Image (cartoon, rainbow, N blue to C red; front, side):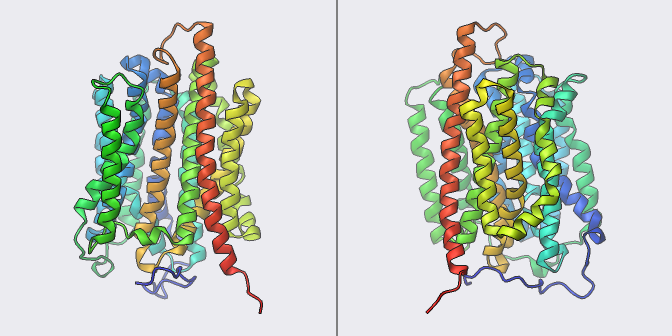
Length: 493
């Protein structure tokens, strides 16, 4: 296998003369795949606006509250690579359909939740279902069409559904909370799963055995990878919680580092590794994954912090907070027609860098100025939404462009894993900082002026910390991107 040669822009050899020439020819399949991405992005964003309500209803702590969203992300991000490998082995369509059934069942189980622990358990199961459904989506979209132009347009349609879910979630969730209990925000996954199931089952052909492989699954690598991811997300909360032993955070840190080292060594030495680590070092792949991670970190962190600031620090109702987040949706939908011309003008590589920088700039605006009024929050939301609209397409496309043709499925899993890990990290880091710098529970109803000032200061620290992390990611991605651009420029004797 040649690892240093990106995929060329050629039709897929598996396609024939009867392949579709328009997106509308595969509208049923695209509807199903779009519904999968809608669920992936809508789920956590929909619940974010309800966190204060859930905290009061279930009488939970701040740390437990952040894991209502974090537990889903840990399960999703930790298991995605494993289920990507399983899908390549047993069939992408088959695994996706099974995951959608599990998703619907877990969502219905929310009706019986009475404690934070039960809700977190349900969220873990939903994360497992998401890990089963998401990795195959982009791979199946590529399989539907025989030209890169149609494939990019298909990914744009699918990712647009996901980004609409991400930005519309808080607004829709806030409005729903004015007339219905928070459980409804989880039950909405049932009809979405049903739509996805119908679209995929009727619109996508059964997996062809020749397109699957018989390599054994790297179970050891999967366990080490999942342990590393879960440890990286859980460990920060132990440093600010009231754990049973003071040494627990340091033990968890050591175990996480050991698992991470073990995962890398395993992937380098295994005959059939879960992930060939050499793929990640390819310039297009590393830049795309880094930009995607920066966008996920900034987007999730900003949504989490703005939601808490509007409701807890400024005293806005969930409905008013939902309306305040609406500009994200407007920018996302209104900028859709501008993405193509922008990418055509500056190129995929530069478009990824510029859009990722816009996301980070928006987060910085919130960190420095967000506490001084909604106008700064609005500017931050607009910049992040505009940047994510482009990153959602070009970063993932770059990753797939940079991989050998027989590694696009694992490439899709890497893209989603990068985004989900960054999303979970953004929420976990923000929640941990708020827990560390705020006395008592943030869901308390009796705040003094000192409590309010302390909380707003914690919001600022969290925003600036996330800004520094996202800036570091974008800077690294830019270095990789410059290496790509320099190799594409003509040389002169």
